[in-house]
Image 1 (spheres, rainbow, N blue to C red):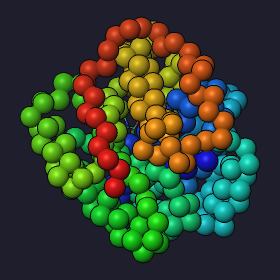
Image 2 (image 1 turned 90 degrees about the vertical axis):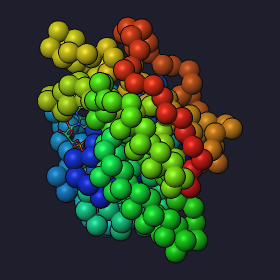
Image 3 (image 1 turned 180 degrees about the vertical axis):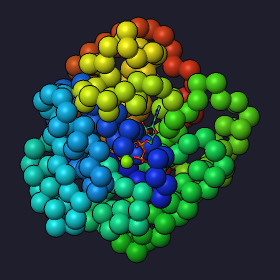
Length: 258
Ligand SMILES: Nc1ncnc2c1ncn2[C@@H]1O[C@H](COP(=O)(O)OP(=O)(O)O)[C@@H](O)[C@H]1O
Ligand SMILES: [Mg+2]
């Protein structure tokens, strides 16, 4: 069962949004998905309480290690995919040790300061992997990427991560009102009203490509295929997104996981 943990030392980097977007991307492919909400503020648990949402997405609140162990057992019995949202505090490292994830995703904004934080997080993951004598594959994903970002500054941030041999998920999450609006009343990008949320269709396409990139890592021949889910029905039932408008930013390309 792929266990994918969202981690960063920085609050507000986009962990919760990126974790929920991936979980919803799996759910709309008819893949049962469990989410462990390990943030003391329980944002995804509260999101789930607001609206009916997809039936095949189950949220387990777990803010202590004993709760996490119970949630892990229940989640693994229920769904082939497990997504874990952590909080930006040192507690998250204990959670990583407990979860032994197949993939850690580090959300990072397109700034040198955030890149430096992501590099520190990657180094700590490498130290932890050496300590446990077990690989801890991890990748950055760009989030809150302004649609009109200057190519030059963005390229510099990408180069900094690449110089550290940090993998980057090909599709960044663009800064879009729709990604904030998911949390207004619960639900998903599919249940938001395009009359109320500007740029909804391009956010849907962006979210779908982002989820497909991560899911693809676990598919046969992918770098994380060894951890692929027992049921691989995800290729079959992708509901179409509403328009053919392309996302605002070019893909970056996934480099080898550490
Ligand atoms: N792609 C995005 N587009 C627009 N707003 C975003 C996006 N990703 C995150 N945000 C906003 O940025 C803030 C921090 O995001 P959040 O996912 O809560 O980060 P974290 O979980 O790392 O603290 C929130 O207000 C959220 O709505
Ligand atoms: Mg959060």
